[in-house]
Image 1 (cartoon, one colour):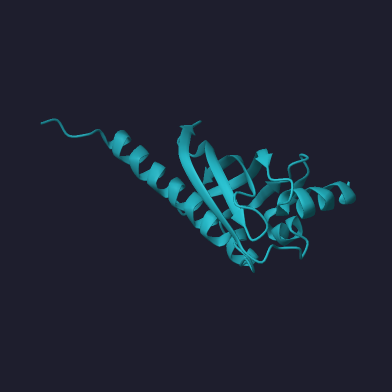
Image 2 (cartoon, rainbow, N blue to C red; image 1 turned 180 degrees about the vertical axis):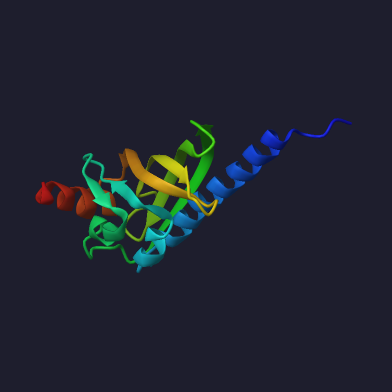
Length: 153
């Protein structure tokens, strides 16, 4: 039986590490989120991109919800596609669905993310861009997030 190549093993490990970052982010994106903990999943120059395309530095990610977090929110991600651009960069396209106390489901779509391998070997987000493909009209995204985003513009 042939042994997998070193490159194949390294890619498998990288896929696992990138998937772990996506799962960690989803696990932290809850009510009363640990925004400082979420920020360490990003590179120092990393950014969160709002639905309207406005970039927010990862160190200011709490501004995304502007103190208007729902009382309950859970993000679930599936179907994670990882494409390696180089040995140190990758992009991901993941489907997500979120449930809140206001609607179940509340909103859904894709997370389009970019990653870079840090000098210490960790894979970190350089960009996280939720693409909302649909939402419940009575949900948190429709009644809180989108109106707040428009007001900031």
